[in-house]
Amino acid sequence: MVSAKKRIWGWYFFDWASQPYNTLLLTFIFGPYFAEVARGYYMGQGLEADDASAAAQSFWGWGIAASSVIIAVLAPILGAVADSTGRRLIWVWVFSACYVVGAWALWWVAPGGEAGVLYWAVAFFGLGFIGMEFATIFTNALMPTLSDHEELGAISGSGFAFGYLGGLIALVIMLGLFVPNPEVPSARDMEAASALEEGEPLVPVEESLAGVEPAAEDGEAPGVRTYLGVPPLLGEDSETRIGTRIVGPFTAVWYIVFMIPFFLWVREPRTQARPLQMGRAMAELKSLLVSLRFRRSLTAYLGSSLLYRDALNALYAFGGVYASGVLGWSIGQIGIFGIVGAVAAVGAAWLGGRADRAFGPRPVIAFSIVVLILVCLVLVGMTRDGVWGIALDPASSAPDNLFFLCGALIGAAGGSVQAASRTMMVRHTTPERATEAFGLFALSGKVASFIAPAMIALATWASGSQRIGISPLIGLFLLGLILLAFVNPKGEQSR
Image (cartoon, rainbow, N blue to C red; front, side):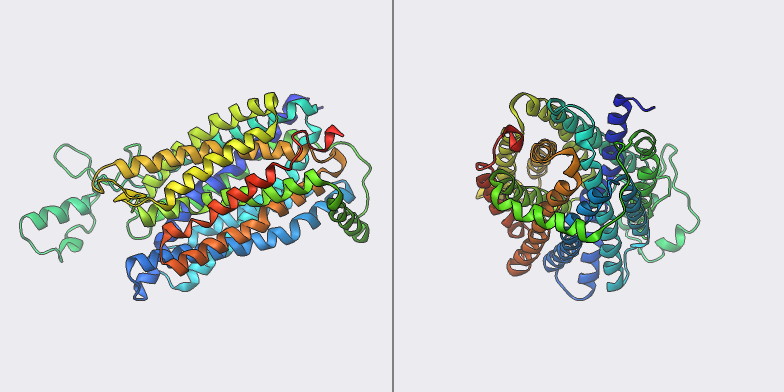
Protein backbone atom coordinates (compact mmCIF):
# COMPACT_ATOMS: atom_id res chain seq x y z
CA MET A 1 0.00 0.00 0.00
CA VAL A 2 1.50 3.33 -1.07
CA SER A 3 1.08 6.13 1.48
CA ALA A 4 -0.43 9.51 0.57
CA LYS A 5 2.95 11.17 1.15
CA LYS A 6 4.67 8.79 -1.27
CA ARG A 7 1.99 9.41 -3.89
CA ILE A 8 2.63 13.15 -3.66
CA TRP A 9 6.40 12.68 -3.90
CA GLY A 10 5.99 10.31 -6.82
CA TRP A 11 3.87 12.96 -8.54
CA TYR A 12 6.59 15.56 -7.84
CA PHE A 13 9.11 13.34 -9.63
CA PHE A 14 7.36 13.80 -12.95
CA ASP A 15 8.23 17.52 -12.78
CA TRP A 16 11.81 16.61 -11.80
CA ALA A 17 12.15 14.08 -14.64
CA SER A 18 10.52 16.13 -17.40
CA GLN A 19 11.83 19.64 -16.65
CA PRO A 20 15.17 19.13 -18.51
CA TYR A 21 13.26 19.04 -21.80
CA ASN A 22 12.39 22.67 -21.19
CA THR A 23 15.63 23.67 -19.47
CA LEU A 24 18.20 21.83 -21.58
CA LEU A 25 16.52 21.32 -24.94
CA LEU A 26 13.99 24.08 -25.47
CA THR A 27 15.77 27.03 -23.91
CA PHE A 28 19.40 26.86 -22.81
CA ILE A 29 21.39 24.18 -24.67
CA PHE A 30 19.78 22.63 -27.73
CA GLY A 31 17.71 25.65 -28.82
CA PRO A 32 20.74 27.99 -29.03
CA TYR A 33 22.82 25.16 -30.51
CA PHE A 34 20.20 24.68 -33.22
CA ALA A 35 20.35 28.44 -33.87
CA GLU A 36 24.13 28.15 -34.38
CA VAL A 37 23.77 25.19 -36.74
CA ALA A 38 20.98 26.88 -38.71
CA ARG A 39 22.87 30.19 -38.80
CA GLY A 40 25.93 28.41 -40.19
CA TYR A 41 23.80 26.73 -42.85
CA TYR A 42 22.18 30.00 -43.95
CA MET A 43 25.52 31.83 -44.03
CA GLY A 44 26.81 29.02 -46.20
CA GLN A 45 23.92 29.84 -48.53
CA GLY A 46 25.20 33.41 -48.85
CA LEU A 47 23.20 35.31 -46.19
CA GLU A 48 24.83 37.96 -44.02
CA ALA A 49 25.23 37.18 -40.30
CA ASP A 50 22.20 39.19 -39.10
CA ASP A 51 19.96 37.86 -41.85
CA ALA A 52 21.12 34.30 -41.12
CA SER A 53 20.32 34.75 -37.40
CA ALA A 54 16.83 35.99 -38.24
CA ALA A 55 16.28 33.08 -40.65
CA ALA A 56 17.39 30.60 -37.98
CA GLN A 57 14.98 32.09 -35.43
CA SER A 58 12.16 31.99 -37.99
CA PHE A 59 12.84 28.31 -38.83
CA TRP A 60 12.85 27.39 -35.13
CA GLY A 61 9.59 29.30 -34.65
CA TRP A 62 7.76 27.50 -37.44
CA GLY A 63 8.96 24.13 -36.13
CA ILE A 64 7.62 24.76 -32.62
CA ALA A 65 4.41 26.15 -34.09
CA ALA A 66 3.82 22.93 -36.05
CA SER A 67 4.25 20.80 -32.92
CA SER A 68 1.88 23.06 -31.03
CA VAL A 69 -0.85 22.66 -33.65
CA ILE A 70 -0.75 18.87 -33.16
CA ILE A 71 -0.99 19.30 -29.39
CA ALA A 72 -3.86 21.79 -29.69
CA VAL A 73 -5.91 19.45 -31.89
CA LEU A 74 -5.36 16.20 -29.97
CA ALA A 75 -5.14 17.34 -26.31
CA PRO A 76 -8.87 17.72 -25.53
CA ILE A 77 -9.72 14.57 -27.51
CA LEU A 78 -7.22 12.43 -25.60
CA GLY A 79 -8.43 13.95 -22.34
CA ALA A 80 -12.00 12.99 -23.11
CA VAL A 81 -10.93 9.46 -24.08
CA ALA A 82 -8.95 9.03 -20.85
CA ASP A 83 -11.84 10.23 -18.68
CA SER A 84 -14.33 8.02 -20.49
CA THR A 85 -12.22 4.90 -19.85
CA GLY A 86 -11.07 5.92 -16.36
CA ARG A 87 -7.41 5.24 -17.30
CA ARG A 88 -4.67 7.87 -17.27
CA LEU A 89 -1.37 6.25 -16.34
CA ILE A 90 -1.24 4.16 -19.52
CA TRP A 91 -1.13 7.40 -21.50
CA VAL A 92 1.79 8.62 -19.40
CA TRP A 93 3.68 5.49 -20.48
CA VAL A 94 2.84 6.03 -24.17
CA PHE A 95 3.90 9.65 -24.29
CA SER A 96 6.95 9.02 -22.15
CA ALA A 97 8.18 6.83 -25.01
CA CYS A 98 7.70 9.75 -27.42
CA TYR A 99 9.65 11.99 -25.03
CA VAL A 100 12.60 9.58 -24.84
CA VAL A 101 12.79 8.83 -28.59
CA GLY A 102 12.51 12.50 -29.56
CA ALA A 103 15.17 13.63 -27.11
CA TRP A 104 17.63 10.83 -27.94
CA ALA A 105 17.43 11.47 -31.71
CA LEU A 106 18.81 15.00 -31.28
CA TRP A 107 22.27 13.42 -30.92
CA TRP A 108 22.41 13.23 -34.74
CA VAL A 109 21.92 16.98 -35.28
CA ALA A 110 25.54 17.78 -36.18
CA PRO A 111 26.92 21.06 -37.56
CA GLY A 112 27.85 21.53 -41.18
CA GLY A 113 24.99 19.47 -42.62
CA GLU A 114 22.46 20.17 -45.32
CA ALA A 115 18.95 21.53 -44.89
CA GLY A 116 17.75 18.01 -44.04
CA VAL A 117 19.55 18.24 -40.69
CA LEU A 118 17.40 21.24 -39.75
CA TYR A 119 14.20 19.35 -40.58
CA TRP A 120 15.43 16.31 -38.65
CA ALA A 121 16.06 18.54 -35.65
CA VAL A 122 12.64 20.17 -35.51
CA ALA A 123 10.84 16.88 -36.31
CA PHE A 124 12.37 14.91 -33.45
CA PHE A 125 12.39 17.86 -31.09
CA GLY A 126 8.68 18.16 -31.88
CA LEU A 127 8.08 14.47 -31.15
CA GLY A 128 9.67 14.76 -27.72
CA PHE A 129 7.93 18.07 -27.07
CA ILE A 130 4.55 16.52 -27.88
CA GLY A 131 5.37 13.59 -25.60
CA MET A 132 6.25 15.92 -22.73
CA GLU A 133 3.11 18.04 -23.13
CA PHE A 134 0.72 15.10 -23.37
CA ALA A 135 2.33 13.27 -20.43
CA THR A 136 1.93 16.51 -18.46
CA ILE A 137 -1.82 16.61 -19.21
CA PHE A 138 -2.36 13.20 -17.63
CA THR A 139 -0.13 13.79 -14.62
CA ASN A 140 -1.83 17.13 -13.97
CA ALA A 141 -5.19 15.36 -14.10
CA LEU A 142 -4.09 13.21 -11.15
CA MET A 143 -3.48 16.31 -9.02
CA PRO A 144 -7.02 16.62 -7.54
CA THR A 145 -6.70 13.09 -6.10
CA LEU A 146 -3.53 13.87 -4.13
CA SER A 147 -4.92 15.91 -1.22
CA ASP A 148 -7.61 18.27 0.03
CA HIS A 149 -8.49 21.34 -2.02
CA GLU A 150 -6.86 23.74 0.46
CA GLU A 151 -3.44 22.11 0.05
CA LEU A 152 -3.36 21.87 -3.74
CA GLY A 153 -1.83 25.32 -4.23
CA ALA A 154 1.14 24.46 -2.03
CA ILE A 155 1.46 21.03 -3.66
CA SER A 156 1.46 22.56 -7.14
CA GLY A 157 4.04 25.18 -6.15
CA SER A 158 6.26 22.59 -4.46
CA GLY A 159 6.01 20.36 -7.54
CA PHE A 160 7.17 23.14 -9.84
CA ALA A 161 9.94 24.12 -7.42
CA PHE A 162 11.12 20.50 -7.28
CA GLY A 163 10.98 20.31 -11.07
CA TYR A 164 12.98 23.49 -11.53
CA LEU A 165 15.55 22.17 -9.05
CA GLY A 166 15.90 19.05 -11.20
CA GLY A 167 16.33 21.18 -14.31
CA LEU A 168 18.93 23.28 -12.50
CA ILE A 169 20.96 20.25 -11.45
CA ALA A 170 20.75 18.77 -14.95
CA LEU A 171 21.99 22.06 -16.41
CA VAL A 172 24.90 22.22 -13.95
CA ILE A 173 25.88 18.66 -14.88
CA MET A 174 25.81 19.50 -18.59
CA LEU A 175 27.92 22.65 -18.16
CA GLY A 176 30.21 21.08 -15.60
CA LEU A 177 30.96 17.78 -17.33
CA PHE A 178 30.24 18.08 -21.06
CA VAL A 179 30.06 21.61 -22.53
CA PRO A 180 33.48 23.24 -23.21
CA ASN A 181 34.11 26.73 -21.87
CA PRO A 182 35.25 28.90 -24.81
CA GLU A 183 36.97 31.26 -22.36
CA VAL A 184 39.60 28.53 -21.72
CA PRO A 185 41.89 28.12 -24.75
CA SER A 186 42.55 24.62 -26.00
CA ALA A 187 45.95 23.29 -27.01
CA ARG A 188 45.02 24.03 -30.63
CA ASP A 189 44.13 27.63 -29.81
CA MET A 190 47.34 28.15 -27.81
CA GLU A 191 49.51 26.75 -30.61
CA ALA A 192 47.79 28.88 -33.24
CA ALA A 193 48.11 32.03 -31.13
CA SER A 194 51.81 31.33 -30.54
CA ALA A 195 52.44 30.84 -34.24
CA LEU A 196 50.64 34.08 -35.06
CA GLU A 197 52.73 36.05 -32.55
CA GLU A 198 55.96 34.67 -34.01
CA GLY A 199 54.88 35.42 -37.56
CA GLU A 200 54.78 31.76 -38.57
CA PRO A 201 52.25 30.53 -41.16
CA LEU A 202 49.11 29.00 -39.66
CA VAL A 203 48.59 26.36 -42.34
CA PRO A 204 50.85 23.70 -40.79
CA VAL A 205 49.23 24.01 -37.33
CA GLU A 206 46.71 21.24 -38.00
CA GLU A 207 49.52 18.90 -38.98
CA SER A 208 51.71 19.90 -36.04
CA LEU A 209 48.91 19.11 -33.58
CA ALA A 210 48.22 15.65 -34.93
CA GLY A 211 48.21 13.22 -32.04
CA VAL A 212 48.79 15.95 -29.45
CA GLU A 213 46.80 15.48 -26.23
CA PRO A 214 45.75 18.59 -24.30
CA ALA A 215 48.19 19.13 -21.45
CA ALA A 216 47.55 20.52 -18.00
CA GLU A 217 51.09 20.66 -16.61
CA ASP A 218 52.72 23.95 -15.59
CA GLY A 219 53.85 25.98 -18.56
CA GLU A 220 51.85 23.94 -21.07
CA ALA A 221 48.52 24.55 -22.77
CA PRO A 222 45.76 23.80 -20.26
CA GLY A 223 43.58 21.99 -22.79
CA VAL A 224 39.85 22.56 -23.22
CA ARG A 225 37.89 22.70 -19.98
CA THR A 226 34.25 22.73 -18.93
CA TYR A 227 32.70 25.39 -16.71
CA LEU A 228 33.81 23.42 -13.64
CA GLY A 229 37.40 23.44 -14.90
CA VAL A 230 37.61 19.74 -15.79
CA PRO A 231 38.20 18.12 -19.21
CA PRO A 232 34.89 17.38 -21.00
CA LEU A 233 33.92 13.73 -20.56
CA LEU A 234 33.57 13.35 -24.34
CA GLY A 235 36.65 15.42 -25.22
CA GLU A 236 37.05 18.58 -27.26
CA ASP A 237 34.14 19.06 -29.65
CA SER A 238 35.05 22.11 -31.75
CA GLU A 239 34.27 20.20 -34.97
CA THR A 240 31.63 17.61 -34.09
CA ARG A 241 30.13 19.40 -31.03
CA ILE A 242 29.64 16.08 -29.27
CA GLY A 243 29.83 17.77 -25.85
CA THR A 244 26.77 19.80 -26.80
CA ARG A 245 24.87 17.18 -28.83
CA ILE A 246 24.97 14.74 -25.92
CA VAL A 247 22.27 16.90 -24.33
CA GLY A 248 19.64 14.87 -26.23
CA PRO A 249 20.58 11.40 -24.93
CA PHE A 250 21.37 12.91 -21.50
CA THR A 251 17.83 14.34 -21.29
CA ALA A 252 16.34 10.99 -22.33
CA VAL A 253 18.33 9.01 -19.73
CA TRP A 254 17.50 11.56 -17.02
CA TYR A 255 13.79 11.10 -17.74
CA ILE A 256 13.99 7.30 -17.71
CA VAL A 257 15.82 7.18 -14.37
CA PHE A 258 13.75 9.73 -12.48
CA MET A 259 10.36 8.54 -13.70
CA ILE A 260 10.91 5.34 -11.71
CA PRO A 261 9.54 6.85 -8.44
CA PHE A 262 6.52 8.17 -10.34
CA PHE A 263 5.60 4.78 -11.77
CA LEU A 264 6.30 3.01 -8.46
CA TRP A 265 4.38 5.36 -6.15
CA VAL A 266 1.64 7.07 -8.16
CA ARG A 267 -1.60 5.11 -8.36
CA GLU A 268 -4.87 6.00 -10.00
CA PRO A 269 -8.00 6.02 -7.84
CA ARG A 270 -9.74 2.68 -8.01
CA THR A 271 -12.56 2.94 -10.50
CA GLN A 272 -14.37 0.40 -12.57
CA ALA A 273 -12.58 -0.11 -15.85
CA ARG A 274 -14.72 0.98 -18.80
CA PRO A 275 -14.26 0.03 -22.45
CA LEU A 276 -13.45 2.84 -24.82
CA GLN A 277 -16.56 4.24 -26.43
CA MET A 278 -15.29 6.88 -28.79
CA GLY A 279 -18.76 8.19 -29.56
CA ARG A 280 -19.51 8.76 -25.89
CA ALA A 281 -16.12 10.39 -25.28
CA MET A 282 -16.65 12.82 -28.16
CA ALA A 283 -20.20 13.55 -27.01
CA GLU A 284 -18.92 14.40 -23.53
CA LEU A 285 -16.22 16.63 -24.99
CA LYS A 286 -18.78 18.40 -27.17
CA SER A 287 -21.01 18.88 -24.12
CA LEU A 288 -18.10 20.42 -22.22
CA LEU A 289 -17.28 22.79 -25.08
CA VAL A 290 -20.93 23.84 -25.42
CA SER A 291 -21.14 24.45 -21.67
CA LEU A 292 -18.39 27.06 -21.87
CA ARG A 293 -20.93 29.63 -23.04
CA PHE A 294 -22.59 29.33 -19.62
CA ARG A 295 -19.38 29.06 -17.58
CA ARG A 296 -18.13 32.63 -17.66
CA SER A 297 -15.23 32.23 -15.25
CA LEU A 298 -13.83 29.09 -16.90
CA THR A 299 -14.17 30.59 -20.38
CA ALA A 300 -12.38 33.77 -19.32
CA TYR A 301 -9.66 31.76 -17.62
CA LEU A 302 -9.07 29.49 -20.61
CA GLY A 303 -8.88 32.56 -22.86
CA SER A 304 -6.50 34.32 -20.48
CA SER A 305 -4.21 31.30 -20.08
CA LEU A 306 -4.34 30.74 -23.85
CA LEU A 307 -2.54 34.05 -24.17
CA TYR A 308 -0.22 34.47 -21.19
CA ARG A 309 1.03 30.89 -20.83
CA ASP A 310 1.88 30.61 -24.47
CA ALA A 311 3.60 33.98 -24.54
CA LEU A 312 5.66 32.60 -21.64
CA ASN A 313 6.39 29.37 -23.54
CA ALA A 314 7.54 31.41 -26.52
CA LEU A 315 9.74 33.51 -24.24
CA TYR A 316 11.35 30.30 -22.99
CA ALA A 317 11.72 28.94 -26.51
CA PHE A 318 13.40 32.05 -27.91
CA GLY A 319 15.35 33.35 -24.90
CA GLY A 320 18.49 31.38 -25.69
CA VAL A 321 18.18 32.04 -29.43
CA TYR A 322 17.84 35.77 -28.65
CA ALA A 323 20.97 35.74 -26.45
CA SER A 324 22.95 33.94 -29.14
CA GLY A 325 21.92 36.22 -32.00
CA VAL A 326 21.54 39.64 -30.31
CA LEU A 327 24.23 39.51 -27.62
CA GLY A 328 26.56 36.99 -29.27
CA TRP A 329 26.57 34.65 -26.27
CA SER A 330 28.13 31.18 -26.36
CA ILE A 331 26.23 28.02 -25.37
CA GLY A 332 28.02 28.05 -22.02
CA GLN A 333 27.06 31.65 -21.27
CA ILE A 334 23.46 30.84 -22.13
CA GLY A 335 23.66 27.82 -19.83
CA ILE A 336 24.85 29.98 -16.94
CA PHE A 337 22.00 32.35 -17.76
CA GLY A 338 19.73 29.31 -17.42
CA ILE A 339 21.18 28.48 -14.00
CA VAL A 340 20.38 32.00 -12.81
CA GLY A 341 16.81 31.69 -14.10
CA ALA A 342 16.35 28.21 -12.64
CA VAL A 343 17.58 29.25 -9.19
CA ALA A 344 15.10 32.14 -9.24
CA ALA A 345 12.35 29.78 -10.44
CA VAL A 346 12.93 27.26 -7.63
CA GLY A 347 12.52 29.88 -4.92
CA ALA A 348 9.72 31.75 -6.66
CA ALA A 349 7.66 28.63 -7.39
CA TRP A 350 7.89 27.54 -3.75
CA LEU A 351 7.06 31.03 -2.44
CA GLY A 352 4.34 31.39 -5.08
CA GLY A 353 2.75 28.18 -3.83
CA ARG A 354 2.61 29.64 -0.31
CA ALA A 355 1.18 32.91 -1.67
CA ASP A 356 -1.34 30.87 -3.64
CA ARG A 357 -2.45 29.11 -0.44
CA ALA A 358 -2.74 32.44 1.40
CA PHE A 359 -4.27 34.70 -1.26
CA GLY A 360 -5.42 32.41 -4.05
CA PRO A 361 -3.93 31.84 -7.50
CA ARG A 362 -5.33 34.88 -9.35
CA PRO A 363 -3.20 37.59 -7.62
CA VAL A 364 -0.08 35.45 -8.13
CA ILE A 365 -0.85 35.09 -11.84
CA ALA A 366 -1.56 38.82 -12.30
CA PHE A 367 1.63 39.95 -10.58
CA SER A 368 3.72 37.49 -12.59
CA ILE A 369 2.25 38.69 -15.90
CA VAL A 370 3.12 42.31 -15.09
CA VAL A 371 6.74 41.31 -14.41
CA LEU A 372 6.92 39.41 -17.71
CA ILE A 373 5.54 42.41 -19.66
CA LEU A 374 8.28 44.63 -18.22
CA VAL A 375 10.93 42.06 -19.16
CA CYS A 376 9.67 41.89 -22.75
CA LEU A 377 9.79 45.68 -23.02
CA VAL A 378 13.45 45.58 -22.02
CA LEU A 379 14.26 42.81 -24.52
CA VAL A 380 12.63 44.59 -27.46
CA GLY A 381 14.60 47.80 -26.78
CA MET A 382 17.92 46.17 -25.92
CA THR A 383 21.16 45.88 -27.88
CA ARG A 384 24.79 45.72 -26.80
CA ASP A 385 24.91 49.49 -27.34
CA GLY A 386 21.92 50.54 -25.24
CA VAL A 387 18.36 50.06 -24.01
CA TRP A 388 15.63 52.28 -25.47
CA GLY A 389 18.11 55.07 -26.20
CA ILE A 390 20.02 54.77 -22.91
CA ALA A 391 23.61 54.18 -23.96
CA LEU A 392 25.57 51.16 -22.73
CA ASP A 393 29.23 50.39 -23.30
CA PRO A 394 29.15 47.39 -25.68
CA ALA A 395 32.57 46.30 -24.44
CA SER A 396 31.42 46.29 -20.81
CA SER A 397 29.48 43.63 -18.93
CA ALA A 398 26.45 45.94 -18.51
CA PRO A 399 24.39 44.44 -21.40
CA ASP A 400 25.17 40.93 -20.16
CA ASN A 401 24.30 41.76 -16.55
CA LEU A 402 21.02 43.33 -17.61
CA PHE A 403 20.09 40.21 -19.56
CA PHE A 404 21.03 38.05 -16.56
CA LEU A 405 18.58 40.13 -14.49
CA CYS A 406 15.92 39.57 -17.14
CA GLY A 407 16.62 35.83 -16.96
CA ALA A 408 16.16 35.81 -13.19
CA LEU A 409 12.84 37.65 -13.54
CA ILE A 410 11.64 35.31 -16.29
CA GLY A 411 12.49 32.31 -14.13
CA ALA A 412 10.85 33.73 -11.01
CA ALA A 413 7.67 34.96 -12.73
CA GLY A 414 7.45 31.88 -14.95
CA GLY A 415 7.74 29.45 -12.06
CA SER A 416 5.09 31.27 -10.03
CA VAL A 417 2.61 31.72 -12.87
CA GLN A 418 2.77 28.08 -13.98
CA ALA A 419 2.20 26.71 -10.48
CA ALA A 420 -0.70 29.11 -9.80
CA SER A 421 -2.22 28.38 -13.23
CA ARG A 422 -2.40 24.68 -12.44
CA THR A 423 -4.19 25.44 -9.16
CA MET A 424 -6.66 27.79 -10.85
CA MET A 425 -7.57 25.04 -13.32
CA VAL A 426 -8.24 22.63 -10.45
CA ARG A 427 -10.70 25.19 -9.07
CA HIS A 428 -12.68 24.91 -12.31
CA THR A 429 -13.09 21.13 -12.50
CA THR A 430 -13.82 17.95 -10.53
CA PRO A 431 -11.63 14.88 -9.99
CA GLU A 432 -13.89 12.85 -12.29
CA ARG A 433 -13.50 15.19 -15.25
CA ALA A 434 -9.99 16.42 -14.49
CA THR A 435 -8.23 14.89 -17.52
CA GLU A 436 -10.76 16.35 -19.92
CA ALA A 437 -10.44 19.74 -18.23
CA PHE A 438 -6.66 19.64 -18.36
CA GLY A 439 -6.94 18.61 -21.99
CA LEU A 440 -8.80 21.88 -22.58
CA PHE A 441 -6.18 23.60 -20.44
CA ALA A 442 -3.49 22.20 -22.74
CA LEU A 443 -5.57 23.28 -25.74
CA SER A 444 -5.73 26.81 -24.34
CA GLY A 445 -1.99 26.64 -23.87
CA LYS A 446 -1.24 25.32 -27.34
CA VAL A 447 -3.53 27.39 -29.53
CA ALA A 448 -1.44 30.45 -28.75
CA SER A 449 1.71 28.33 -28.73
CA PHE A 450 1.03 27.96 -32.41
CA ILE A 451 0.19 31.65 -32.75
CA ALA A 452 3.04 33.03 -30.62
CA PRO A 453 5.95 31.30 -32.41
CA ALA A 454 4.29 32.01 -35.75
CA MET A 455 3.92 35.70 -34.84
CA ILE A 456 7.56 35.82 -33.75
CA ALA A 457 8.67 34.07 -36.95
CA LEU A 458 6.57 36.46 -39.04
CA ALA A 459 7.67 39.61 -37.14
CA THR A 460 11.31 38.52 -37.32
CA TRP A 461 11.07 37.84 -41.05
CA ALA A 462 9.25 41.11 -41.77
CA SER A 463 11.56 43.31 -39.68
CA GLY A 464 14.81 41.40 -40.19
CA SER A 465 15.42 41.91 -36.45
CA GLN A 466 15.43 39.35 -33.66
CA ARG A 467 14.60 42.06 -31.13
CA ILE A 468 11.51 43.31 -32.96
CA GLY A 469 10.49 39.70 -33.46
CA ILE A 470 9.88 39.36 -29.71
CA SER A 471 7.42 42.31 -29.59
CA PRO A 472 4.18 40.32 -30.22
CA LEU A 473 4.59 38.74 -26.79
CA ILE A 474 3.87 42.07 -25.09
CA GLY A 475 0.40 42.19 -26.65
CA LEU A 476 -0.33 38.57 -25.72
CA PHE A 477 0.60 39.16 -22.07
CA LEU A 478 -1.52 42.32 -21.92
CA LEU A 479 -4.61 40.62 -23.37
CA GLY A 480 -4.17 37.72 -20.95
CA LEU A 481 -4.04 40.15 -18.04
CA ILE A 482 -7.24 41.86 -19.19
CA LEU A 483 -9.17 38.58 -19.49
CA LEU A 484 -7.93 37.49 -16.06
CA ALA A 485 -10.03 40.27 -14.51
CA PHE A 486 -13.17 38.32 -15.51
CA VAL A 487 -12.07 35.13 -13.70
CA ASN A 488 -13.68 34.24 -10.38
CA PRO A 489 -10.79 34.09 -7.85
CA LYS A 490 -12.33 30.96 -6.28
CA GLY A 491 -13.20 29.36 -9.59
CA GLU A 492 -16.42 27.38 -9.95
CA GLN A 493 -16.06 25.73 -6.57
CA SER A 494 -17.40 28.87 -4.90
CA ARG A 495 -20.87 28.23 -6.30
